[in-house]
Length: 190
Ligand SMILES: C[S@@+](CC[C@H](N)C(=O)[O-])C[C@H]1O[C@@H](n2cnc3c(N)ncnc32)[C@H](O)[C@@H]1O
Image (cartoon, rainbow, N blue to C red; front, side, top):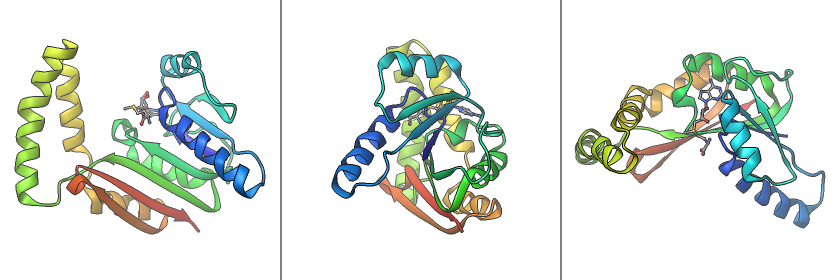
């Protein structure tokens, strides 16, 4: 059982489903189940409309109060979702609660550039270019301004790792992508 929390319309979950099916074909074992959870019922409906893989199930639910029992899942994934959650500590505690012993937590999120030069260039791009492009292309400057500001408010790599540890995750690791523009945090429910 894999939980794709804040899974939106299921783009990541479809990839997981294909990967899980290939692994199952190679190694055998039980079929994977990927449970997409998102608090926005319209996103879930749009995802179902798009069509899914047979491994995917859909649930409307809040990351801060998951409608799931304790020790339920083998893995919990959240990609570009936790930044939007009001109480990130509560979401982390819930992720830890629903993972089985030995379960894995994976979070992919925008983060902080790790060099001064990249941070300056990224700042200029984020605050000057992204809102302007949002206005031209999507006619919605505010949404893109919110995106930039929410990325800025989200804790840096080390702070988020400490929040994971405080929620009970062990062996927390950080992998930076594009110099820290995005980062993947992993931890284990041991
Ligand atoms: C940027 S989308 C990411 C979707 C998907 N994970 C992906 O990578 O394509 C963020 C999603 O987080 C969901 N979300 C925000 N706060 C949430 C919460 N408290 N509980 C569950 N989902 C939430 C939104 O409804 C939205 O679908």
